[in-house]
Image (tube, rainbow, N blue to C red; front, side, top):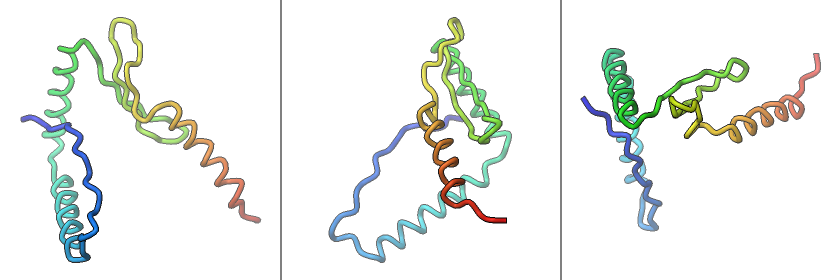
Length: 113
C-alpha cells in the first residue's frame, strides 16, 4: 500500500466559472472527505509504518507531539544522530501567533460575570 503525499496546486476560479460548476466541485469534495472517513485504523497503522521505513532510509525520524496547553498536533522531522529538527509543521512562529491570538480573543471578548 502506498500513500500519495504529493501537494497538488489549486487552480484559481476562472471568469467563466458558474454556480453549477461550483456545486459539482463541492459535491466532489464532500465525497472525498466522506471516503477518507472510512479508512480503517489498520490501514493508517500500515501507512505510518511505511512512512517510518522510508524516513529511516533517509536517516530521519518522524515525531508527532501534542502540545498540552493548546492541544495542537505538531509534526517534526528530526535527524536521529544530532536530534536536530529538520522541519516542523506548524512552525514555532505559527504556534506562538496562535497563542497570542487566543490571548487577544480573551481580552477582546471578555465577559462580565
